[in-house]
Amino acid sequence: MTGYVCKYTPVEIIRAFDEGVCRIEPKVKSVEKAMSLTHPNMCSFMKGALEEIIRENINEIILVNCCDSIRRLYDILRGKVKFIHIIDLPRKITGSAYSLFYRELLHFIGAYEAYKGKKFDLNKFKKVLAEHKMENACKGKCVAVFGGRLNDGVIENIKRRCNLDVVNLTCTGISRPSKVGQEGDLIFSYAKALLNLPPCMRMAEDRSKLLDDLNLKGVIYNTVKFCDFYSFEYTSLKKTSNIPILKIETDYSDSNSGQVLTRIDAFLESLGVKRAIAHPVKSGYFAGIDSGSTSTNVVIIDENKNIISYSTVPTGARALGSAREAYRIALKKAGLKEEDIAYAVSTGYGRINIPFSNESVTEITCHGRGAFYLDKGVRTVIDIGGQDSKVIRLDDAGNVVDFVMNDKCSAGTGRFLEVMSRALEVSIEDMARAVTDFQEDIVITSMCTVFAESEVISLIARNKDRNDIIRGIHQSVASRAVSLLDRVGRSGKYMMTGGVAKNKGVVCEIEARICEKIIIPFEPQIVGALGAAVIAAEKRQE
Image 1 (cartoon, rainbow, N blue to C red):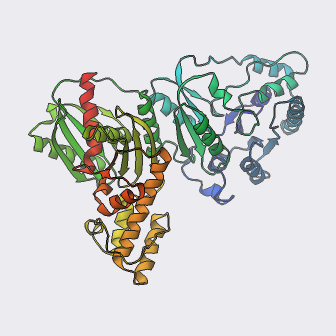
Image 2 (image 1 turned 30 degrees about the vertical axis):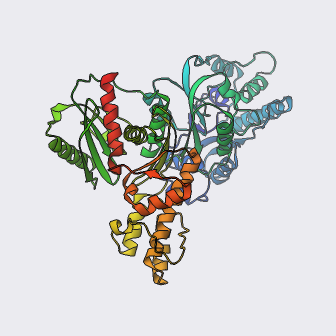
Image 3 (image 1 turned 180 degrees about the horizontal axis):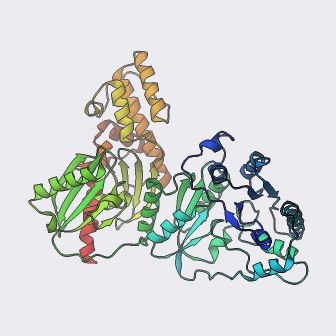
């Protein structure tokens, strides 16, 4: 079995040698062996591919020099596997490029003949080419996946979640050449057909044309960590296109992580194309369950969307147990039984693991819906929870039109404040007050929670005033929130949700930066669950 990574690989030539081929698609969770052979800042796909090659003992490999990382992969593997060959890929589609690529294919055929000890069979090659059929293009509304390559599991996950056709325009979704001219030199015609595949970022062609012929509802744009190409294209598309675009970043170890799927689900929900399972909805009461990283919240409303009861319990180590307990408390407060609930919607990072909910909806949509329920004038929601922070833009009807998330680390979240309160040996409640009597303007410079904690410990050792340090911590959280806000654009009214909204110090610092007042709900932690309950009640109206 011969492994390859690039769509420009002459797969059909390899098959003409009666050899099997497999696209190397990293499925590893750890790149421990690869890390010992290369620099940690190399492309995560390259490291994943190297790890896969080592673990699966792939000994025949064809590479295309599409980027520096793949050239480095060739350098590492040369001498370590039985056969490896790298093909030089032109950047342009011109007559000279065809000739160059033609010579590269002839060189590869010669090298493979020498390794296999048999001649290339042109008739077998013709039969292989004849097997290819033209794929039908998507004619209706669709969602495109664009940018850097995504593994097949993520693509299938998107298809399962979307009720429109999903078109994979990454290099893993491009079909093989189906029209190869039979006149003249067949290898030259094949080289020409390969180069005329829809261009990747390695090519100088205008890739935006790939989107022009599609009736697009939205684009999910993937960037690969430590890959330099794709972020530039995303920025250009975002500026020049009117099509809704979601950017995700993957590193081939967490492509199906909760954070990535939350972004995708929220984007599909905002487009109105999220696939939902139909359930019969009777009249009665409706519940929203928000299973978050720090707290689990339940809200119960009646069919007129009046809040009947709510509860909040710490999530702890058992998310499902916390959800059941919060649900039990809310039902008890309302004087209801579980069978009285006509429909329940779950949200939060634990949303898909709540067996007593009828449907799951992302916390982005739910916080937007909950905030709009509380105040129809709200256009921007700042949600700072236990493990991430989000800014959500709403339209005049309360629909999500844009959002950004900080889910890479705990900096600027409730967890960040908890760590700092422990370092200062003050309760989280005492730290939540606004600091007005400061003596020195202290700036916490570290982005990382761990490094910021060390910075705070250093300030304590230098006998800096505790109030000044607390104010610096509040400013640090506020600056991260405002940077997210500026990415979606400022638009009042503002409402703040999540547990950190109870921290008056953080709220005051954000207000000072945006020069506007922020609405704080009566119980900021339940807004996501409230939005879920409202969505549940609206199911009866559909």
